[in-house]
View 1 (tube, rainbow, N blue to C red):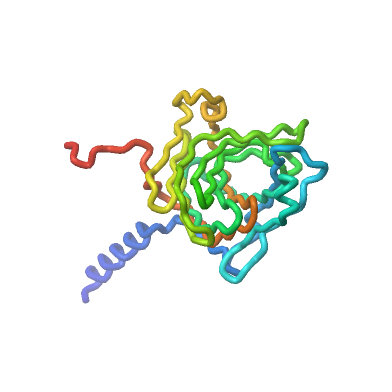
View 2: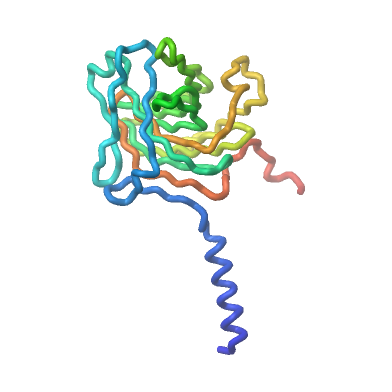
Length: 240
């Protein structure tokens, strides 16, 4: 093989490697395979104030991280734990593989927090056995309680203890979400939903995973370099 052909082959191989999702970030929550120092644990005020928020954490299992709480925690309404990661990107698409047990696992989009680690505002998507639902959460630090505004709900039954993949694409336009093979749901802040919570959407670089209401397992998170979820559907047969 001539030196010229070798050089051309190297150029082709390098180009292929650079285009092979080199900038995707994959986080495997299996034991010993993820960097805990890049994540922070945050709390969330319940809908009814409690005297003191419980210190919840995600426990490490062999192939995932897991959240759980007791029946007494559920009764108090203090049953949430949030783990947050800073993507460093104001626009991205990410996928979370999770499993719903008795709880409702979910994701958090563009959250804002107080200096003492309490969620103040954010957008979240939860998976339960009876629904896929997106909410806006707004905390009142004085009353020490949170208000949840329903943004969209898909009525869909699925067995418990089953893995699901939530995909979310976000940027200044808003965010698009998809669970498994569901249709893509898009929330545009420019649209008038009659709720200031949506109209006031402010994107930031933070995302999170959210455990609540009982057993939730989280297996992996992938941040894609290029988003594929559509904010607006296009006729595939239309002439370009």
